[in-house]
Length: 358
Image (cartoon, rainbow, N blue to C red; front, side, top):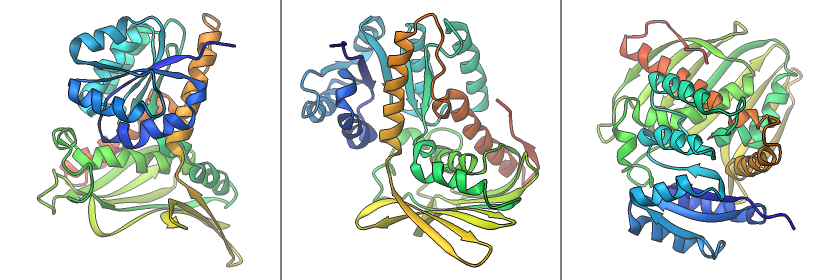
């Protein structure tokens, strides 16, 4: 029987405890979880206690020495980096330089300069193009709702207009509301949350956003600025659209809508039979509407693809391997670039800003 690949999770916060551990448990037959690392012993032990229900052999690592142990452990082939946005890139690169494959939580980086430096550093450590694998965990690209909607958009004729309306629920009842790192970098919740919605947009339309013109404002003083953004954007296919995001609304609603010459495709977040997910609707030219509900499963799917990729890449050492493109660091960088352009435009009173290409 083949030996299962060994991985480590770096991070022990809310998302690790509520999403990574349960989702990894669903595919536990594919790998061995060797370590969970955190900066503090207490945090690491708290996450390990939860993980031991599914991975009885998992060990605690913490602090600088624990991080060095993971970097130097040649038995580890994959790592998941689920840390504060400001430190993820540096730690990911340290692991990549040690030859380990990395899946890093979004956002890919906190700014365009950090992305440019990161890509140059990554290129210098790659033994082959794209190896070790540096994936960004953008689960929206793996949600079946967006996979389906992308196919449906191809069948609604010429693209005429695109609308993305985000009325979020980031208030004191949200577990991430008090997250200090999201409050301490440029863009705050707009950047951290917004990359998801840009990923959904780019997935649906199948092309890039080339330029934006945005107005930003700050209304809710319990949130870092800005907390509202309204942007026009232009796609490379010539189509225009609007992106509106309110970080905290009393009536949350999340919709992507692509209007074509032969019909319209809409994706709306919702809940059916107690399950959260997305309702995908196709409105045809004859007035008919067909809808399908897809429960959330993006985190499960992205982690499953990552495990598959690192196993295959390990088997084909030196012969090259092309990992799942939806997870690539560059894809995550493109999401950040769109938000960065919108935020820059907003800071300049709506000036047209071209989106940085990666």
